[in-house]
Amino acid sequence: MSTALRTALVEIVVPVHNEERALAASVGRLHAYLTESFPYDFRITIADNASTDGTWPIARDLAARLPNVRAVHLDEKGRGRALRRVWSGSDADVLSYMDVDLSTGLDAFLPLVAPLLSGHSDLAIGTRLARASRTVRGPRREFVSRCYNLILRAMGAGFSDAQCGFKAVRADIAQALLPEVEDEQWFFDTELLLLAERNGMRIHEVPVDWVDDPDSRVDIVRTAIDDLRGLARVTRKVLSGAARVPVPPSVERARMPEGMGRQLPRFAAVGVVSTLSYLLLYTLLRAVLTPFAANAVALLVTAVANTGANRRFTFGVTGRAGVLRHQAEGAVAFFVGLALSTGALALVPAGASHAVELGAVVVANAMATLVRFMLLRVWVFNPKRRRK
Image (cartoon, rainbow, N blue to C red; front, top):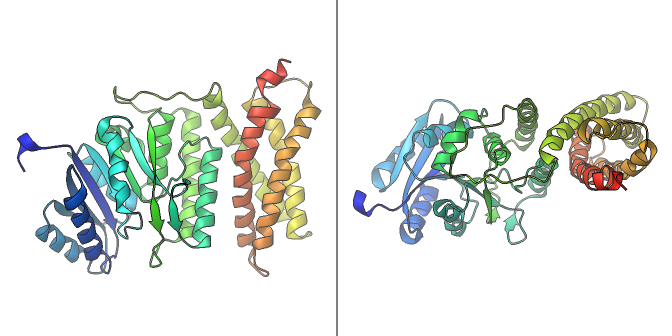
């Protein structure tokens, strides 16, 4: 390829682990699509994550046969690890990745990378949650995905779908963010996006068509637990001020609504303490009460404490004036959480383990957290109301 004729270069990483059945067909289909339809230079990099089947020989064969395809082998597993390895050493203008099953429609790829190449945006993600998206997947994955993204929304994230395996980032942005991203597994995406947004970078969203791969071997529950741990770690990082990274001069920082940059991490810290207190109280009460009664009592106690803590710590309201009104208005969030958690418990099969019960109420209360923050900020502790 002549350097004089070179257009922008886009690198597409395909992380794989034991994908010998799907790899050849998927890479062949991706390569044909890009060759025929993509107007920029491209390179496909197959990143093998310590496969133990025939994945690596197939990857090497594809790299030998297909132009603009290469293969990289890693001795350890981890999607984040693979992306870090390839992106860190890339000379491309835009770095991207997609899942090997090609669950996301390829027609969305050019709309994904075009805003990055034009300078309009810094990162781009495919979203399965937009109205224009068409998604086919099982109810379990749908429920877990929506709950996870609602938790992120409650933390103040402006993006809608953190875990869709269809993302891109400008190379200069990636080089600024990668040293600060700690996760090497599935949370890598979310951490990258949270750090980018925290530093005022522009995230473009593209509605995608997405069809669930029935052969997917992702452990949804374990991944969700690891992601929650990652969220707690990032929250601590934000609270300590360590989430700031050197931002390239090309980035036009977005501005959050007044006060929200200070309120969000404090609200998250109060939420973590409230959730742990709720889980402890719920577990103790379950020894003598039904799941529904234990949930209602534990939620009521922690909701009162949560409103009081947010009143003082998050929104800076001091003194006793208005305490009863604030608690009464905060009770609206309590009833939202009660309705969601009661509904979640009703869906738990009879005879399910205590861990399943806990998981159901934690997810439901995480969904209610978004409502709680908006109610507290916009209504209960709105400074305009306090000045009246």
